[in-house]
Image (cartoon, rainbow, N blue to C red; front, side, top):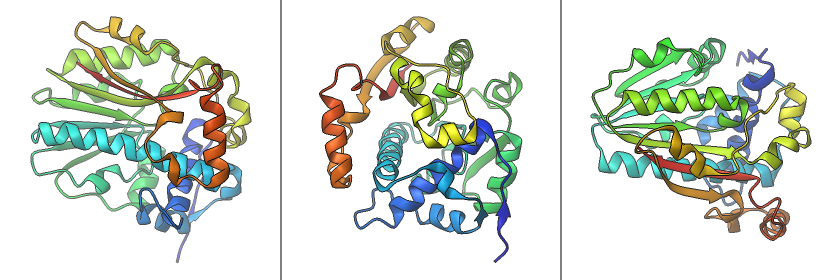
Length: 272
């Protein structure tokens, strides 16, 4: 089997850590996502995945975060069977394949052109109304190509912290201004997470830099009239933490009791 040589660096390289986490989870005795496609993709990539520093605990955490965002996306599509999904910074995530959205859903996966080229070689496209777009989320042009005729859910996992605050605000303003209604679903770090970023092997080894930390999720409500925070779920409070290895469960219990660290990561849901 010919293996794909990967030359990604910086923030794009960190997508390989997320992919590897889902692959490790798929092999766990109590898998969260059962993402066999991620495991197959890892087998085809020529890359030293030891650089990610991924462990059984962090892999389960990646899978739990993905499951939470999958669940919220599925809820939105159940209520809006004719909708648009903007899956931003999609990397090598198989969310479109996992959710298998109905025929009335328009799905747009977006990432940097070099990531899109790799994705096209590794992952088969899902069925239905599907588009794969090569662009940066901060580019102005790509959003104008998406029809603004349906309720829209924007999902961005592992993205917000790599943006500068002004770019994150501009992205949210553009999405909420363009579409008639919808939701924003994304994870974030608090300021303490940004300060501790070099403790994360995947970030440190890729030479990536985190910029934007969100300590007050309600601040974002002021960025668009009608933007309402629905959920601000701490990582230490996610459903399914009992699926972590014993050491991981202990770590999360300790973090949950430390005021400065329990808000290190959140998963946010907004309505507009």
